[in-house]
Image 1 (cartoon, one colour):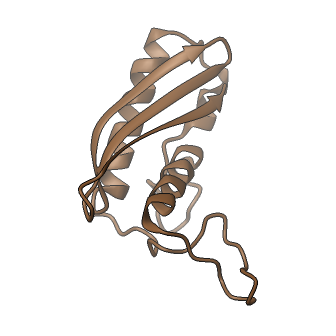
Image 2 (cartoon, rainbow, N blue to C red):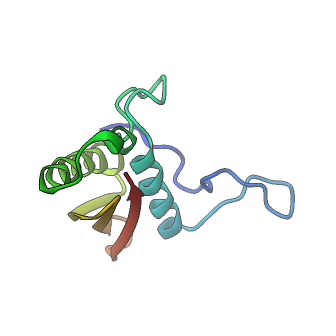
Image 3 (cartoon, rainbow, N blue to C red):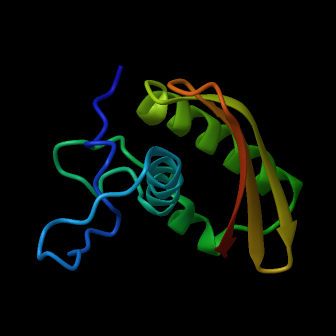
Length: 124
């Protein structure tokens, strides 16, 4: 299983009122990790060359059912590889609306057993 960053540090990294690195609770952290995974492209991180979904590469692709299916496959695999120690992915649904992809991820947090549904928007 791939190694994930410390599951409590805020993303993007912030400084709190005490001048310390800001921490977030687990549900917010997992949401931030998913958002980070969506915007990163493989190769962005030198020591983790497969980290990311590569959504930025889709800017020049035609928006349609083929793009939806490919994007869904990329996201599902990336979530399972990089966040599989924290969540169980129930579903990934990708819808398109002109120049945007709407990505709805349903997952269960392993530590709490709670199911979350989050929607992310990505302009293409």
